[in-house]
Length: 160
Image 1 (cartoon, one colour):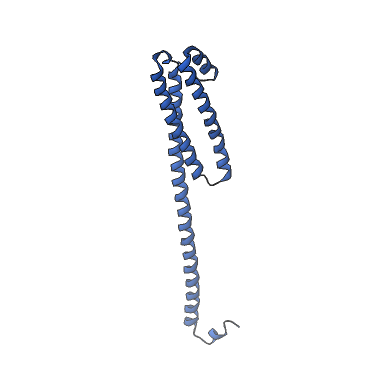
Image 2 (cartoon, helix red, strand yellow):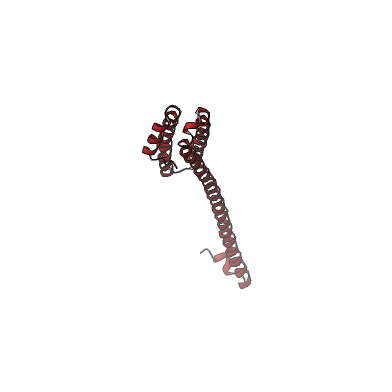
């Protein structure tokens, strides 16, 4: 038997050995629990940090889309003010598009799941289409303001 060496010992010795074994198990279980809690904390911190970055990027995207929409809406107002004004709007829109594209790439870099990356493909496609529409409207505006205004309204861009 396993307990044979302890049979001839006093009860105090046997209790001390049993207490020692239980203490070792308790220390082992506590150590494992602490290790898993530390790992869980690290993963939770990563989730919080990544989501914070995502929110910051999403707000940046919203801001860039606002700049693009605002600039496109003003194109209809400034059509008769000359090519330089339209060129300024073109530059503003181009800068916003570049920032938007960089933000989407950063979101894609942060995303580790395939489903999340797939969700980001739609805004990227819309950005490409939107860039084409914006460029066409600006080209028309520099040539024929009235036709550009009609075309922008037909494309669903609101002009005040």
